[in-house]
Image (cartoon, rainbow, N blue to C red):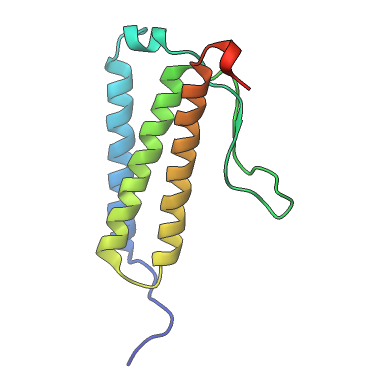
Length: 133
């Protein structure tokens, strides 16, 4: 019989996803901790400019804003983590193929939008002051 309500993910699936995300966090921390304190590229990049995100509420207020003054290393670390999360979510969509797809797709899109906002803010912050609006 067709069940109109999808079964929740099993405990084994939940444990597997948790283990994957914990390993991703550990890998990211290992890379961050193994980097020199001030890599040459990051010294050349400027801090982020303030930038509203694209996601809006019913009153057209931004639900996610990039703050001014975030350094390049912190910004790129967040981008890396957000993109890793988007990758994991897309993997789950492929594997699961069930009724939870809508929520997973929304989560993936949201993560990608936040990553793009961070990258664009970093790029805007690196432009000469006379060209910034």
